[in-house]
Length: 138
Image 1 (cartoon, rainbow, N blue to C red):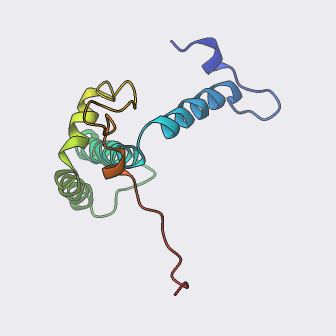
Image 2: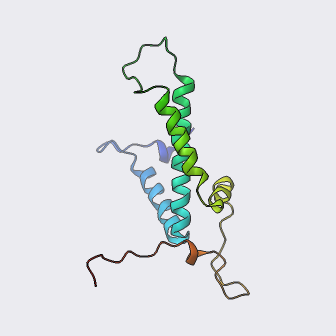
């Protein structure tokens, strides 16, 4: 199902070098052209959704009759609480994040050229994280 470049594993290291380089280039382009605040929010939302889905899967797919080498501690309370806490964190995320997440990134602006009002066409200034100041400076 995957293209050959993603299936090929380096014989010496046993790692998929080609696919690693492609993913690095893609992430580098995202980091270069998408505001950091958007990337942080989308990464957080994606991670929380994935964790909640896995927690629901642990509850739904767990068959008590199958032998297992690992038991979920505090089942079913721990997976259920993780879904609740993920839901709480997702609920408190900015609404723009949901729009971008649902669109799969298709609503990202095509350029950063100034608009008629003279402001950038994407809210880079509002979403960028301010640089940290060292606490030891006076």
